[in-house]
Image 1 (cartoon, rainbow, N blue to C red):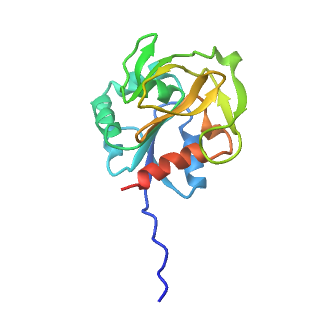
Image 2 (cartoon, rainbow, N blue to C red; image 1 turned 180 degrees about the vertical axis):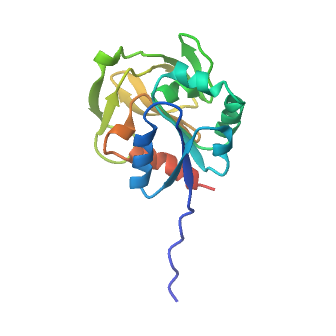
Image 3 (spheres, rainbow, N blue to C red; image 1 turned 135 degrees about the vertical axis):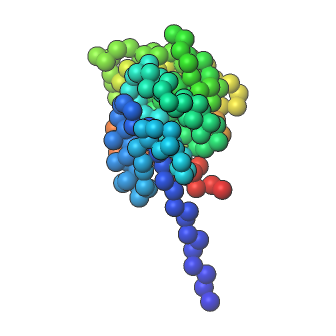
Length: 197
């Protein structure tokens, strides 16, 4: 009797929904058949398989996260679950931030806030990545610059001589906005990490 293929484990991924482009991330997850939940309080983290920390303004996110024990809850969750940080989310995941501000310290990288300039310096690039497939569209909006990375950090994409997509274990950091294009590979990378036992 032929065996049926193994069923993939259903997952729900949270998207920090305090500020920034969280709706675009949720639309991308929905397109991929993944349930998502907007995370606005520490209780919203319960039962999630992973988390996306979206772009926006990192200092504004820090203001919201400083209330009701949210920062400590987020740090504990992110230390034990797959996470994707894009733009401002990358800043919050980094070990070191310039100019200095608090961060979760889960990616062994140093970043410079607004390293690619202001809003008017926003731009779109297409670059090959370490992920299977063609060049990826990369939308940079007031993007952070990755200044350095430790040996344990995998560099998955470069723009010029600088990393723009990195991974350390199940933590993924992205200087650009993958949710604003049609390429789902960055989100798929997170989903695969969430489904791995």
